[in-house]
Image (tube, rainbow over the protein chains, first blue to last red):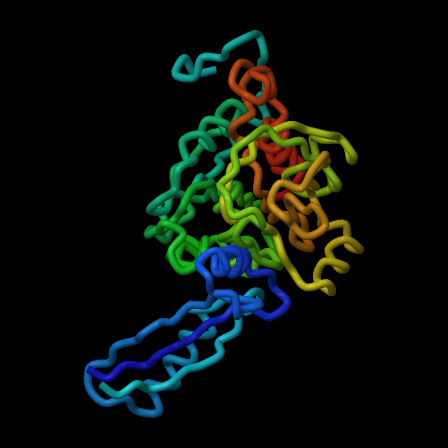
Length: 83
Length: 251
């Protein structure tokens, strides 16, 4: 079934404690090339039937209303993923 | 006082007769933990707690509402994010914004629901040290002009329980400056900052002062023998404050 992917990231100015914990763990495993990590969220919205512009618009609205909180997060991507 | 709620020690708030008629709603969402404690605090303060179910749409003509702590919907998505769209919340948001200015208190997860509802500005993210924390916490009452803080003196320090995981209060600098300038910081952490909250903020109010949210738990410090240091009843003032507000106000 076709899906719409919504990616949400913490705003750049918001400290991301989870990302900070991950960046601390990476070098302990020998991954020493990374200066920073920020952890976001990926939502996959499954659609029955065709993804029309109206459906996509609904996904954008849902992304701004429920899937993200504009005080702390940005919706960075809303796109259709073909199977 | 109901024998169902025996007091330990000789403390009694001895509410006046005029206060005892107040009905205060306590909302239960799936995953709420502290609704019983909040209802108990209401009763100890001298009012009648009214259980409100998140999926219902009737406020049952209550005089004020408490959104208690817990992990509504398991904190899925974001703390308070899903509870915010419960049918009961729509009613509460309308009543809080109406001319009647229904007093609304959000404790911990309730505070998170209030920010997700945009009744209060800012948001809560994970504690800066990433750990759940549970301890006695000293707060300073910064504003006693809200519906829920009138029984305290401004500058008074109170000791109540703090227990949370997503307790770091954040907002942009402009919002923080406005909160400070308008005296809407209701409570501030004293001694240390337990979660990285901006400007040590533990609780805030809306512009009208009828909506207050705070991270620590006043409902766990209402009875001698069980509060911080086994004696503290500093939380009770929150609940007696709203009764005073209701008596003085015109509902």
